[in-house]
Image 1 (cartoon, rainbow, N blue to C red):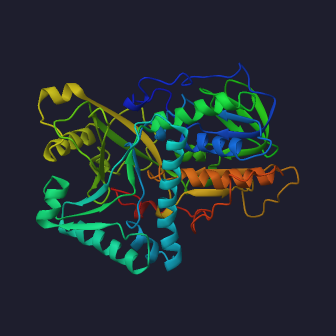
Image 2 (image 1 turned 180 degrees about the vertical axis):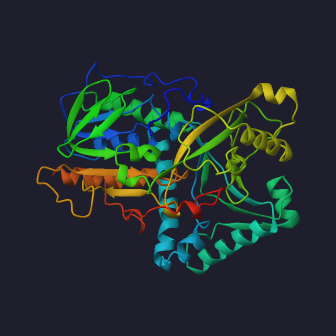
Image 3 (image 1 turned 30 degrees about the vertical axis):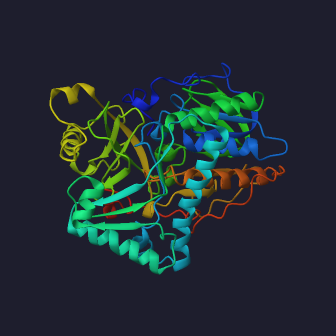
Length: 451
């Protein structure tokens, strides 16, 4: 299961970065300290932490099968929104302790704060606009679920003091669409994810020209226990450590994780300009639909998977070279019903649709840990095995979780190579479950979201 060579065009990726199809040399370097596979938000975040957090930064080979940030990071809904309560009930039902559930919420808020601070400090031009997030319930059933989740998190002592509930008429006024309830929280912003990733990478290449090499359009076909990374078109390199930032495509390199990270296709309906100014990030239908608006006025609306032609909520679909016409029809109608568009032929001429592949996991919890080379329970580790790590499976909710997850893996990688970690990087405590992979029960997946 490899990325499609001809994906749908995402508006985020226009105009392209000067590094969109960058190749540092015709063949890979014969050796490097760290090889990162995947050059989206996760891969670039890993490179940032590795290079900025070591007294003597490691040499890094960053490899991407397609163009820079051409996967899920360059195809998402433009949200940086922490979720302080929605998954409360599912985690409690799964046996997580009160402290664990609160830690999951706090980790997202910490990510939001840390990434916001970085964008401001580094002056990354990525259309960052701080704005509230609204969870909008269009039915009484959804309203009850949202309110119960928030109430439970509040009873647990979680970080929800800033959350505010609107109901009935006040909810309709606040959300500017007819609904039964809406919950608002401030841990949210809209941004251009492509400009964020490419902006970070541009600064890294300028600061560490001899330490970081980027190879786009270089599909990795295999990784070996001795650190050898094989590609289909640029020979090989040998790394002292390997990090997989491959998200939905992880099972191509680690078949044993095929049931742990499952590809799920998402679809975006993008409207260049809207008659309505939407000052908030919004999600609807228990996260099934979500929208954001760029500073230029263009609307980014995603969701509708449950209306896909095949009837499986796009679970198991890894092809982002096509769109589903039924999903597009639903999103077009949804945009009109919620007042985002006026409808008619003019809207259709200004609309653009694309798809992207998410990597879903059990309870939506990502895999962020050192990865054994063992292929079966009785496989004996070899003394020549190099460290291999994974930072993937963010279940369509990576923006408020990737940054600190990558920092954790960068710390572990540097220490595994006996490299000194400098003061700016401190140990990040991951929430329970991030380092414990669990097979995903496909039958349990809600066609609206992974929680």
